[in-house]
Image 1 (cartoon, rainbow, N blue to C red):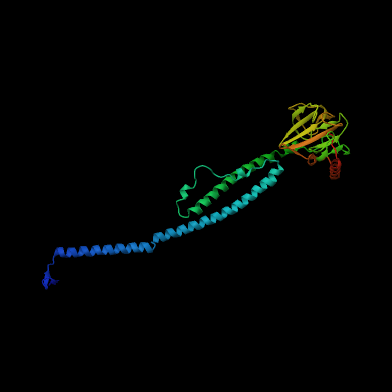
Image 2: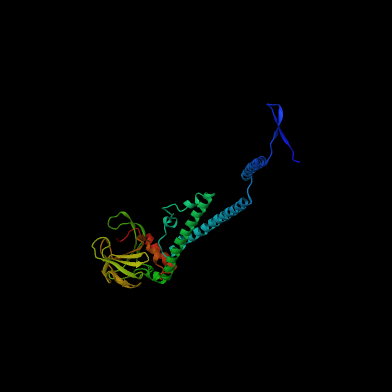
Amino acid sequence: MSKVKYRYNPETLSYDRIKTGFKYYLKRVFLFGLSSNVIGFVIFLGYNEFFDSPKEKRLQRENMQMLAQIEVMDKKLEQVQTVLGDLQQRDENIYRVIFMADSIPNSIRMAGFGGVNRYSALENLSNSELLVNTAQRLDIVLKQLYVQSKSYDEIIDLAKNKDEMLRCTPSIMPISNTDLKRTASGWGWRIHPIYKIKKFHEGMDFTASTGTDVYATGDGVVDEVVSSNIGYGKHIVINHGFGYKTLYAHLNDFNVKVGQKVNRGDVIGAVGNTGTSTAPHLHYEVHVRGQKQNPQHYYFQEDLTADEYEKMIQISSNSNQTFD
């Protein structure tokens, strides 16, 4: 027997019988379901707000692992940059010095990447600063490695040509000077013989009789054969390649012409007293990449013993006046 339900009516101060039936129960079920769904949804939102799902926890672990790997890679990049810096130092201060190669400017070694922002895709990610910084450092290392690789290719080519380079390097005295008595004046400040003023002498003078043979100090090609009544007078310039040139001044006559190939020891002219000169002698200069160098550093082809070299330096340094 079903229970009869009543509801108190305050207006009549009596109980009214509640009609029950299919619609009544359907309504009750609907209201119960609706309230359950609302409560469940509120609980779901609260759980998501304060608790991570298993998937989120897994993604967080993967994210932390990726960050740890990026930090490890960043530290390894520091080690690579240190090793690369050491290679660059050796390249500049050893290999390129040995082979007389031009230095690679820092503007090329450390060049950046201009134009479009290469890292815009990373800027919207979490931890974007770390990602962008690591990507930038990796690009810089790759660029420096490429430059260093090309540099070593050049050094290898120079090493393959070292025999030719040694033949072309000025390395003997330009006149026969076995007793060293012909060493007159060397590199440094001297009193000019005509103007009687202190002037820097950018070469080395060798006294000798007019007509004494003058030798090419290294293999090369004759660049200039000049006749003049002033300055260097009659003089020859030989281009040896590899950045070397030599000049032979105040000659009496020539034994070569422009464009002629010469070998070390070939007679190219004769000592004279032409141009701004006060006595027969040879003025000799060595140029390296356009800069005049002290010739005394280029007499090492079995020309002088250590004692003879020291004697030659002493004689040329004691002279207080030049012949040109």
